[in-house]
Length: 298
Image 1: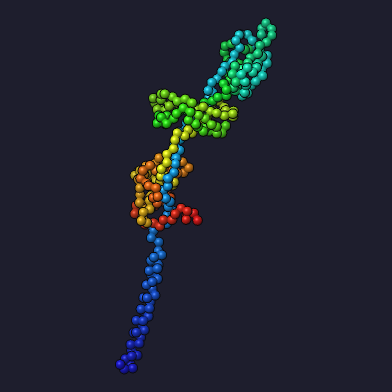
Image 2 (image 1 turned 180 degrees about the horizontal axis):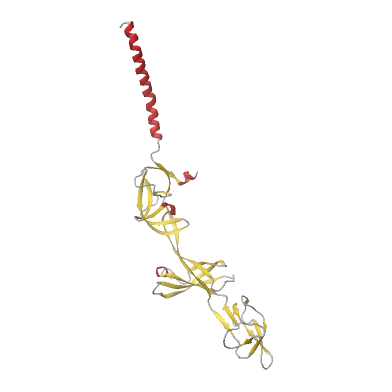
């Protein structure tokens, strides 16, 4: 080959070498970028786990005296001379509550026939006392009250006498209680049955105040997910599960609910990877990158 021919080939060989070098340097970079590229939206997920839920029956109603005793003098024409107690006071059996003057002179004492709390009184000095008409004193025997409320027929079957209850009474806070009596009939129109829950407390309760009792009738243990993982729609109740990095929509049946968790009675198994916050933006088959709730919190 002549010197002139060699010189003619030099630029061509240089171009080929440069092109080859470029190909070698760019091919691994493209592959690396391809591997690093996200394959779908990042979603926070968690594993469906087992939880136990208390089966609670709620009874809303009114606080009333369990037994109220009316106190009147045995004879007519007596005048109130002295009053020792007032409404709201606690009395013991035999305690003198008032003194009445007799028409012929002298006086008699009006005693409490039972221990309890005076709910009302009409006694005032100088007023006439009678064996008929309004009572001088009304006593809530032994200070015992009942929360009387109504529950649906389906719930009355779960209740039994002596089941414990926790009652929130307006103005008195939380008090203990116990199912005392259950109705044997239901209201035909509303299909509600009456329940009497005895209230146990040393606190002063107001007659006719409102209260709500929670009665634990048992518990159920099964798979659960947060309420945020559930979607309610025309297609039914669903959760979104991540399987093989794609979204699957599962129809589920729900049970009890407590503290933001919902019992799943069918459609989901323990350990299934569930989207923590289900939403309409995720659809069946969408590719996603699962991020566990604990890792996401960090």
